[in-house]
Length: 124
Length: 120
Image 1 (cartoon, rainbow over the protein chains, first blue to last red):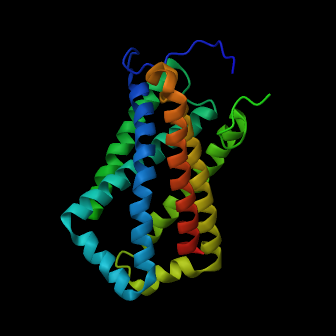
Image 2: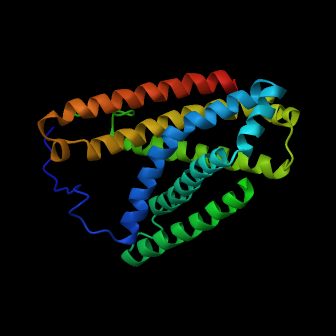
């Protein structure tokens, strides 16, 4: 495939403005959720199987380590969701300027921190 | 001319569009499930079961599983073609990339069948 467009994907050579950090975090959270879905599907399957299975999942979710794991997956999901909404807004041409992209990155982090904190309170 | 054989929509624009459509479906489903937790703060088994047993929800759930698999594949494919290239990995990059994509494809198909089995 002939592609002569210049590109630089060397992550150790490029600068990291805030928008780049939120962008790579969007990708990392995506990989994280891809793995986490296995755990969520397992919990969903057992919880829907029977009343005993449902109680078993509740017992599992009461364990601190499981709480931490579920919170981590939910945090990845919430971050990915919020960064994704910003992505869609940018597809509509909102926040594409240099200033706008910085503001978008700041708002993504702000909303994500709030959402992840609320999820943490709700899980515990 | 075939320039790429591993992407989902056979064109960058196709993948771009599928990624956006599936994202909207996934966001809607996520908010729907979160909303059900808010409506039933002390959810019991029968309430939980009833949510997933309705016909509308079964359609929504399976459509979401399809969206999840398309979205995950396009995302993992994009990451693999950005970071698993000859620039980072040298001459054997294609082998590593195809292997990584094969593992992702396998996981995606397992999620697809498992998800449909649970939710349909």
